[in-house]
Every structure is written in C-alpha cells, then in structure tokens.
Length: 198
Image (cartoon, rainbow, N blue to C red):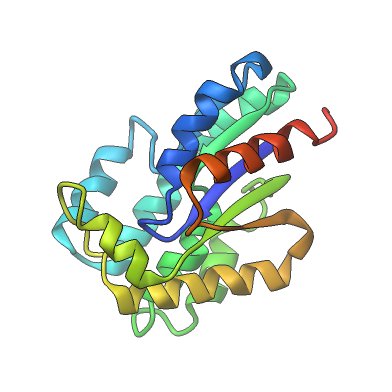
C-alpha cells in the first residue's frame, strides 16, 4: 500500500511525517520522500535554491520521481510493504502546473503525458490544507528559503491540489492543517491503522 503526504510548504507535512515514523513503527513501513533519489536530489535542490528555469526544474522532479519509484517504492510494494512518502507525483501536478504557466502551452496536459504509463497511483493521499498566510508565518520560522515560498504562488498551488481532489476524490483524505500537530497526528495515525491491510 502506498500512502502519500501532500500540501503546500508550511502545511506541516514534515512534522506529520516525523510523527508517523514514531507512531507506526510496529507496522514496519518504508518511509521515503520526494525529492529524494541519491542520483537526482542534489540537482533538484540546486535548481530550487537558484530559482532557475521552471522547465528544467520540472524535468528534474520527474527524473527524481522515476528514480524514486525504481529504487524505493516499487521494490517495497512488491514485497507487500506499507510505503509512506512525504510528497509524490501530486506535488508536481500542483507546483509545476503553476510554475510552468507561460513555459509550456498546457502544463497539466504535459504533466499528465509525462507521467502516463509508468507512475503509480497512491492508495491514499493525505492532503494538509492551510491558508497561505499561515503557511508563510510558519516558513519564516525556519532557516533557508525556496522560491516556492510566496503566498500568491502557494495559493495557486493549493487550488491545483484541490483540483486533484475533485478528479480523484476517493483517494484523498483532507486535513485542516491549522489544528494542533498532535491532533493531526492522532487522526492520521488512526486513519492509517483503520485501512485494510493488503
């Protein structure tokens, strides 16, 4: 089973991810994240930090996803393991669909085509929803800054996430990320434990 955690920067994904690592140890899940491939991650991070070409950035994210699937996700799923990923393909359909506006004629169509036939649909996607203003307040408290960290940009990204929900509603579990982290963690843990084991 593949479970993914999604949301705009500052929504609390990393906090939830780390909490689940502790809470779900008995299930022996494979915890992973994107970008995360050893082959591609450093190039992705350089591109994000430098605010360079959006198309180059998007293709690097796709390459990272392909490597992540081949090296981590697919082998774990073949062994019937629970996989929990901090970010996955929905991040590209949200972030890159916004950043590629004006770069390619139809960003959504391009992203759909480039993932077709090989990417794996998650069984469950936990989407943390929060106002961009609250997210930015949280982001100001952590070191470093990525070019995605802009309230207007994050607002558009969250809209793209919600479009994904309307297209595949059964896959998503929506969470009000303005709640206390412990409250969110409790609810998500219970939700995961209630899922039928494959």
